[in-house]
Length: 409
Image 1 (tube, helix red, strand yellow):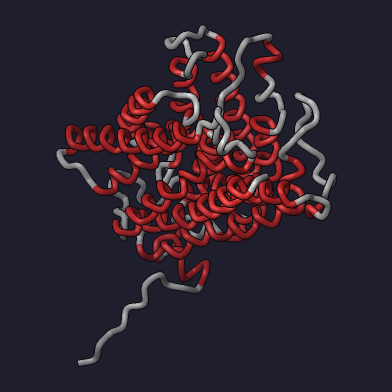
Image 2 (cartoon, helix red, strand yellow):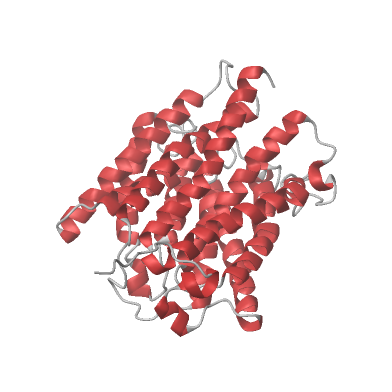
């Protein structure tokens, strides 16, 4: 890896790592004031735990030697003691993806989860779901080789994590929301964001870091500076799709509720970022703008599904990440450059994208539901009702997000 690639790889790794605190701010602002510490700690807990597990054995599991191998040998280089410098840079970049994928799940169980139980879930889910799925999608596994398996002229496209990150996290979030059940008083307007500025700050950090998320692989794997580098396309699509999704979401809000909100703008931005993640290197900018607009509109409606279907996804992980991830992944079947149905390709890309999306969704949901159910029935996953009503922060962490001083007259 030359000096330029190395410098960008380290910078991109830092950008993606910064996204997990961005998730903490985004989610933290959305919950009530007495739950903000708990919400942010779930992201920071994932950051600590998943980093350690990835270095010990997760990176080893994220690549396989044969298409139908479940995961790599976790003990092949335990603790990365034998890796060279370039491998360690790539491993660290990969760790940031594992961290944020786990952190994203936490938004579905805001206001009602025990921290210790969450940490157990996070560690086991990362081990049996994220690490193997990363191998399937990017490490030579069955999804990466699906086109060849079918004898197709193309392969599954997931440049930066539509399946491995967003569908994966969204499906697990839905499973946990079902296991833990509804919050007390679950209904529209159950609680408003306690800090809109925190929400906007978190969304801004996510957008900032996402340029490393999407374009980071161009340096990490030595592609920057070559004639076929797609980094320019990736960054313009990351900007354009996200911006268009904001517009789409705000239009829906205006017509549906009469007002366009800042939380809606932030949510639309995140939805657009989610959708462009798998597609950033394989769409022309015009098709990326359309993807963002469509995603903003659909996700603005999708977050309402929980009220109709009765699952309590507290911070709309399903409506934004699962739905947005599905849209971005399947959209490639129609509009991926040269292989999409409407831009010179045929049905093959659609088939591959659909199988990959459904495969990850079903596997992640089933395993997350089993893990969540097992934890709930043994040590307990959900906090007591009285603690939920009082606020999670004091009962779980012994802290308050905001200390208000009373002035004696």
